[in-house]
Length: 257
Image 1: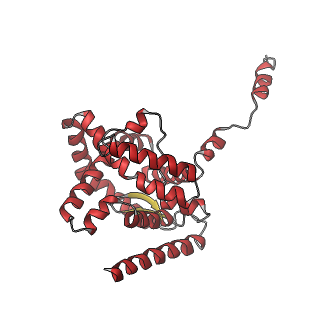
Image 2: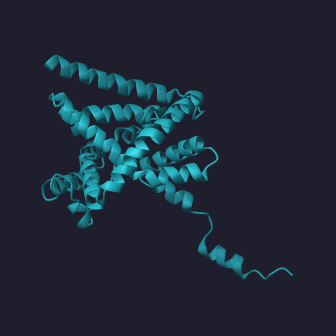
Image 3: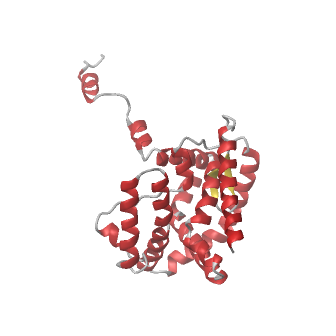
């Protein structure tokens, strides 16, 4: 047992080191694997159209909203463990304390997280992962990747996903203790829950964009950049560079006749 734990720990360290090395040496082209990525994107799109979307749509149609919300709260609460660890790794100790408190409140008073009691009390919900932690400490994205079934990612975020899944995902723990059937059921339910959340968003992307692949890629990279900066990037981009006084002066100019 001890040797297995040591082997797993060495695998994690090796994966992290590989991600850091490759990301640091990566080309400035954000999508050097575009040909492969587009092929996987097409596979995911077909799989989603004929499998995932019908299942998610049926789930949404037959399951009452309070129950769907409860399961969504449950999986979100499980993710709080990952958030707390990455808060600590980013030295955001105040956030770690708040997020840990949120997890404890929802797990106890919220019936294992099915009720978002902390949210009712106004406690903010944050999401941190190891991909964000690597980015926080200066590790670059590396090449953009489209993962089978999982969708948009980067080399850095894929390595982060592996790290989080192994270290802080309670669903993985059920597999490690031999509860394989429970693990598979929880993972399938989690996948359906995530797809149900994206039902409307996916339709909007397909209808509004001439190239849904490029739209998803650029939106993903911008969102991850904003998350790493804790939303500060979005605030900077929203600023058009004009002071209110400047805008008033423009409005006060006489009309040209």
